[in-house]
Length: 264
Length: 160
Image (cartoon, rainbow over all chains, first blue to last red):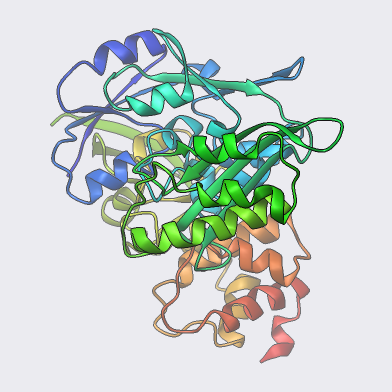
């Protein structure tokens, strides 16, 4: 089925066009064209914006701003974004990474959206023309607002500061059993002073593992130190069941993989 | 529905068509222009059979709208042979028996071409990674990996 595509130079005009019923925003096409190909009749028209700001990557003073139209491949090869390259490369195969955008990944339902898991651990901020909101807040009401995401911003982690793991059955490319992203701050004595742990496939969208984060504070990164965090790792989680894995399986293996990531 | 014009360079030739807005590049190539080398497999971005090269980047033509490719340079597997002489990748696929049913082959060759364009001497791991978005249900992948490595070494003529 053909869909009328409207292209606008500015996000403002694209936002106005999105108010029509049945209209969806077209980023890289890996979600919305896929849905149309699958027979999703709720999509009757597509809107996109060619505003160059959507395709810009800005890095300065330890802060990063990534335009919503930036692709996974562009992030993976950017010289200043090496800390995120692993998470960007975890998305799809090479062709998908040339198409899939940061903005689109925020809307990818589980088991997709691995890059957003990394952004959640980085405590990223999501910008639209209506203002900015923390990614966690944005995700909790994802889909409620039709406003086009224009960028995501976060503090650039130091090399190795973002620990990321995607678990899949097919190597090197496969759909997630689960994904985990961890950003830790450690005190001078090596104990964890703060932790942010984000999980993919543990709900219909990426979620924080608050109980595990709290249980890690003041602990050392060894088997005994992380034990309490692993016990509560699935607290509040509602893992998805799909052809890749059942909710039970995902909940069973999460502590194992989280433990390996914390001790890596 | 009103038709929209699209114009791009396909395998060195200028192409211009009027299409329905929202037509995928795969549909435009196969059913409007008549280049049937990209295959429609899953139409979901999963199998890679529809892979083509747009402005030097591997893309899935089933998820790309044709009108977003206005002015682009597009390469498909049907444009690789020159003057009846197969491209080294095509020759290597034949020589190493990397094709069985052949449905995945054009997509595999596109993915391999992008790899070799950027990495002329790839490792086995590079090849596996480059082909990771392309599914083959016949060969078990090993002959395809060997074909790409053979083409990279430039000795496909000797491998027969």
